[in-house]
Length: 185
Image 1 (cartoon, helix red, strand yellow):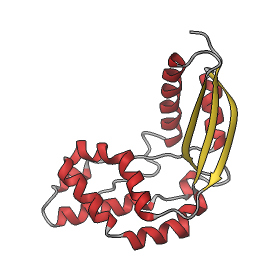
Image 2 (image 1 turned 120 degrees about the vertical axis):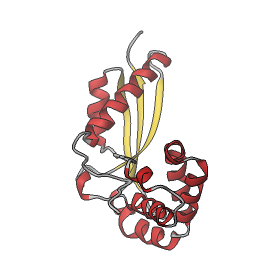
Image 3 (image 1 turned 180 degrees about the horizontal axis):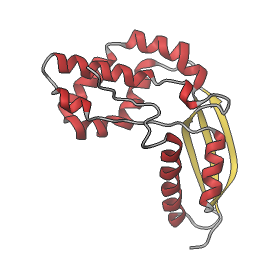
Image 4 (image 1 turned 180 degrees about the vertical axis):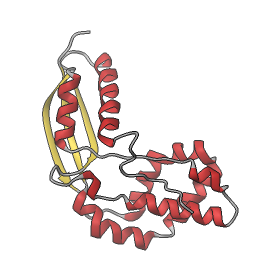
């Protein structure tokens, strides 16, 4: 089976373009809600500037994919449903976010800091991924399939724990931003 749930470097949508567009829309919407001089705090998953995005993988989506492929092989999910699923993720660097905020022009950066992630519990990590992506999987497959996919992935907790320790904590971090509204609408 050739299906891929997580695609890196899909040619028709460059990840940096995607994050810039999404963040510009998000910041513009928040600018309409926040009074001039008001603050907004963002905490985002990010990568260090020195690491090229194309050089990191996001193994968790490979594990979710393997759960779905098992379900296809067992006749629970139709193969065509899996081959039509594309799920991209992009984690910006601090430089990416600086460019987005500056281009948007609605906010100034009052503070920005990155914190490396360490000691991540695999079960909590899966629950965070689930919170951020379950709706997309539910829309595509239905709630019963999405539920089973996440449950099957949790059965791979040892593999997830090893990946978190060996790779994820070396390439991912949390980016903390405090933005100040600078426009009158």
